[in-house]
Length: 100
Image (cartoon, rainbow, N blue to C red; front, side, top):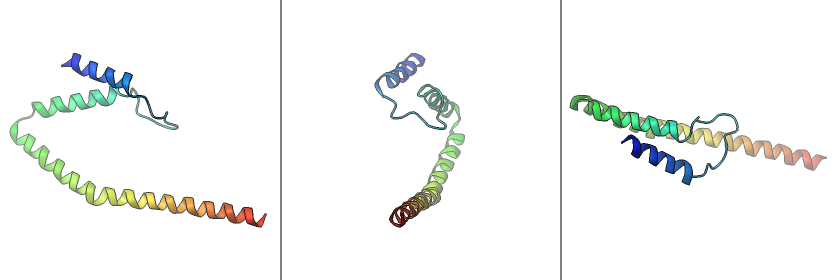
């Protein structure tokens, strides 16, 4: 399994080009670290007993519903706020150019 994981991750590294370099902060060791995290989580999920897996599934579904109801709404509000700020700053720049 380790050989398959390593080969698949190496294939991602070679075949998928990085879209852009992060300006301030980015995840280190892309795609190795995220790939290792996924592999570890799959191993842990395969190692737990039945009742624990049921609890895991219930909590995952609960938190997914919570995210869909609250998180997406908050993300939409934040995006609209940023959009309004950009429009306001453009309007101020245009007005300053007209007065000059």
